Image 1: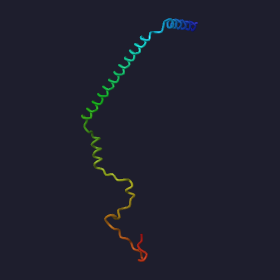
Image 2 (image 1 turned 90 degrees about the vertical axis):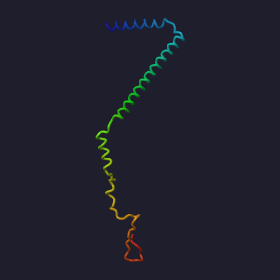
Image 3 (image 1 turned 135 degrees about the horizontal axis):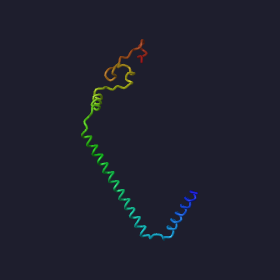
Image 4 (image 1 turned 135 degrees about the vertical axis):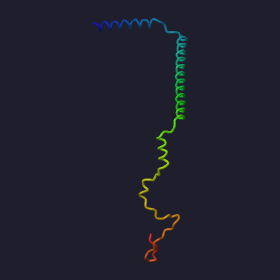
Length: 124
């Protein structure tokens, strides 16, 4: 019974709203155009306001960041890292696999071992 009442109420309210909307004539073009221009102007002002606010917030953030960088003193972490970088020596991991220094080819000429038979040349 209650569902029938609700359904009937909905049907009546829709019928009355439809009758109100259908009874009038279409609005004049000038009035619709003026309304659209006003809505466009409001949206443009809203966009300009939001862009201005975002720019102001960005400017404040950059200014605050630069000011805090000027005020900051290097902490212990920076000093320790600087000391480590200036006092440590780096060597490639493969350096231990290289053979020991035998001779400098640009400064010393190696002694070539001769063969037992002098006619055959040197051993390489």
